[in-house]
Image (cartoon, rainbow, N blue to C red; front, side, top):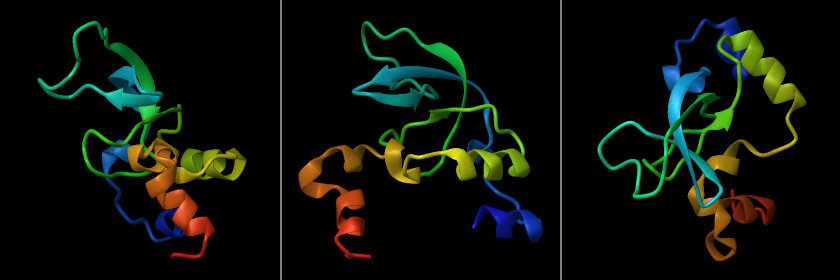
Length: 108
């Protein structure tokens, strides 16, 4: 998909590109701080170079640390990664309702 997007010069949402963003780590997810709902008491935002591999309901989608700020860099990163693009989705951390599990079982 990323190669097609690159070849066709399709514009994508800036959140897919790495950029310095304020983040907190919560329940194993790297969450972007972008409004008054963050951070919670005791959380200290840290600026990290992050991007989103998938976009979902806020604030249930975690970012990944990355320096990929161009489509060719995203393509290279995707070719080298060994984790699912959905690794940042909070719904996939619940074994009973895991969308990744459903995918593996042929639901999709």
